[in-house]
Image (cartoon, helix red, strand yellow):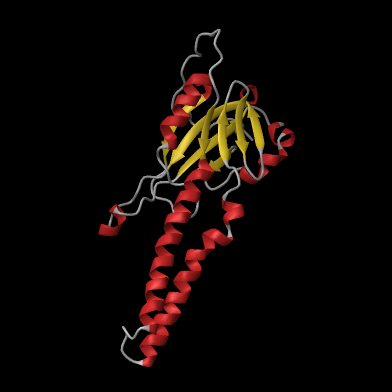
Length: 213
């Protein structure tokens, strides 16, 4: 088995040593999830309350329609309450950190990958497929960070990363899903060029993908 990145796109020379240590680059991945959950829950909750109100105030015709409206409202109200019920899970820290040591994940399953144990780091993303008019309203871009170990012993030394090994389509490497926010891409690029440009492999477009990663 060959370790390291598959068909690297490019590499850049190392930066010149600096007497000033740059501050860590931190990406708050969990913050995006909290905002999206709150917005989605608020919209669903409003729809649910309006439907329940309509079912009790006679804005629907017939008892069957009123029952359906009530059921519809209760379902959406429950969906609206989900972010509150799951807030403890949603509020857990999920941060990606780049510093002089390497790449860190501050989350429910924390891990750290030192620069000297990595052969390559790349960003993989999916391009939004726009076929129907609604495709222009729904962002389907997925952003992932791919890490390629420099030697086969990496997996033994870092068991906390095992759940990311060869995730989705990556081969001989680890894939960390970062959601559907393209704004993370330039931040990661800046961090890689600041700390270890020699192993940065750039951005890889993987077309349209189906699934959560």
